Image (cartoon, rainbow, N blue to C red; front, side, top):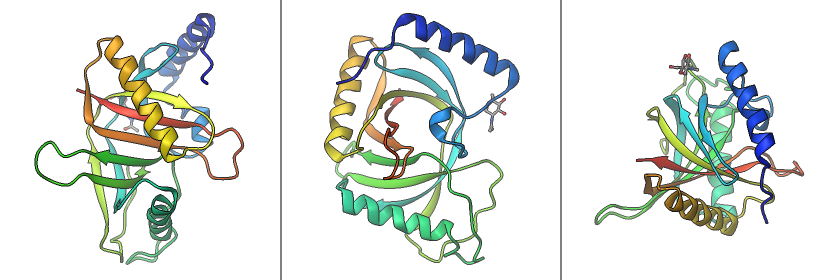
Length: 202
Ligand SMILES: *[C@@H]1O[C@H](CO)[C@@H](O)[C@H](O)[C@H]1NC(C)=O
């Protein structure tokens, strides 16, 4: 059950955001002090936010499914890379969010699932020793975002995506239904987890 954000709170948020854009970007509190991709809030209502994200770089690896252990395996692989399992034995700071992307095939291919970690601008990425880790860039653009708390389970992920799709349809927003993204910001020990599902504007 999701609590609606009262209109007054949203307008306070709007004022804070316009102040913020005057002073430059500061990462939202749900990034928990980690670097995370920069965006500008275009629109918000009680169900979703429309954000315009800067272009961003990510390191990524393919996974076989979205169940807990499969995701965990992919996440550990990316952590090892960041912890120095790379050709330069270089440690790279952890960031937020950790994103799981499910890309449905538009034609005959299989669907692909990846797990990715954001890479801040200017980061010098050493070559991975594990060839299944690659780098990719997400172009700047609109992302529709629904936030939910609690455990970021597979069923919560898909339920919230469905709710977001329904809200976008009622609001008449154009989005890409083939690329579905779950963005997690918290480790297992955080009590009040901030989770998001993203659909790209079309
Ligand atoms: C994000 O985009 C804005 C607007 O183009 C720009 O001013 C800002 O420097 C960019 N931030 C990063 C981290 O690239």
